[in-house]
Image (tube, rainbow, N blue to C red):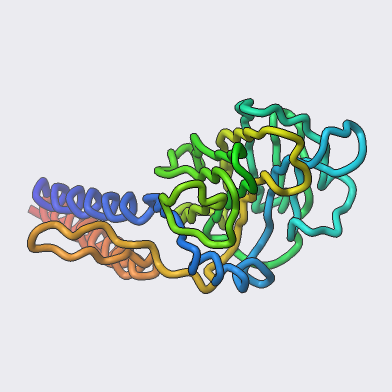
Length: 271
């Protein structure tokens, strides 16, 4: 009986390890070619919803909005989906994006100012893309310290300088930076927190300095780049559906073990 219990514990431990690996977040920077392919991903049915923070203007209580949330950043927006926010150059601002899969409420809190809407489409979001944009020398849009459902995200997005219409990662002043986050359980709802900092000189306005958090399904993006394989090994991405037979096998093993324990007890009573 002890050996059977040990075998069951070993199987359960192995299954827990597999599930932990499959739930690991992956974050990678996207190149310009990937961004071009986002043209398709950036629309229905791939894009579920998007939250945005932008420089807007200096008008308080009217004029151009600074934060918004909805199906697109272009609207049309209903009441409560946009708001003014007084950005300060070089100021660190905390933000939280929350999606409740039951109520379908999407809420975007930037420095205590909240915008929200009810998500009515049927997509099941599986990934997040964060896009940062600057448009001139002296401008920086930085999004960092990202945490998704309590798990730290391994990269950050930082656009700096003039946006030249092309993008090569780590080049000088690209003006555009995009990161792609996968591996979270977004379909069950999620909370993404982070910090945003805009830096500028002069009087920029509109969306020349901005960040967008795009939430959606698999579109035309390439799969994440696998890590270097260990010596003598090979990296294989884990499909959650492939785990189903393993769980079935585990359940069968437990059932057989329980039957053996029951038979052994009956024999003892008969003896």
